Amino acid sequence: MRLLFGMILGAAATIGIAYIHDSMYAPLPLTAPAISSEPRPMVNWDVVGTFTRRASTAAREQWNKISGK
Figure: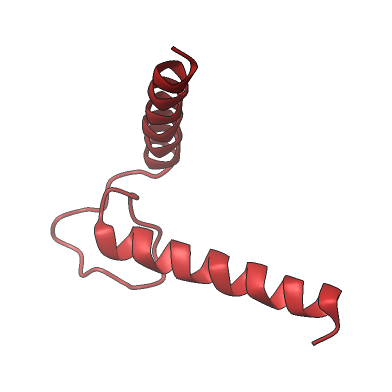
């Protein structure tokens, strides 16, 4: 029962965080060219991949500072 509750809670948290993140940004106009520095909604897989890579790189750098490598 705990496992099922944890899975449902995790899915709800993931969807909620993605919704909050996406609602913080106005939609990009269709006529303007896309600039890579503009924030885009997280529903694009390339945005999620970039965000994940940056987060893992930052975490790795912090771990190397802490461990003295």
